[in-house]
Length: 201
Image (cartoon, rainbow, N blue to C red; front, top):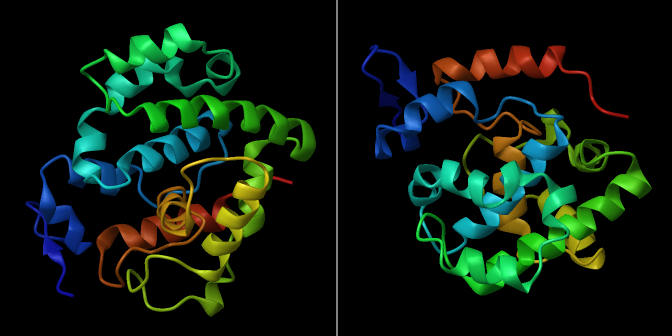
């Protein structure tokens, strides 16, 4: 797949050309390793909301989602009531899907349990970092053995709306693998960040 040549003349991953807002997200966030529990929870929730929709739709509404869900502080979201569900169903700034809204609340409760059991969400999720030597060519797959195993474990723990494809997109975005295309100028920056990153224990 040919690369997208950005306005600065340098190649990026092809999907960057899909919308102007993709480039800053790609260059500054996508693939850089994350160990912040709140950001990990947010991304998993946003990936769940994206199911059946475009990432552009979610990215453009991200600040609205953050406002609606208290910056994705799962300790707060875990206490959302039916009144909160109704409030969110009337919030035109987000995706008004009852099942996905209720899944975020459920998953916030499961996240609290995970922190108690694993110490942090980061410690749990980074257990699923694949061996870099075993990875196929970048952006040639939408699931992996690790994302399938992660989705299975999350389902077992009671999480909702997190299948293998959602789990893989989450892993790509949060830096559990470097899936930037080989000629993408950001790939090397991500690789350096991953080398310097201290895996959570």
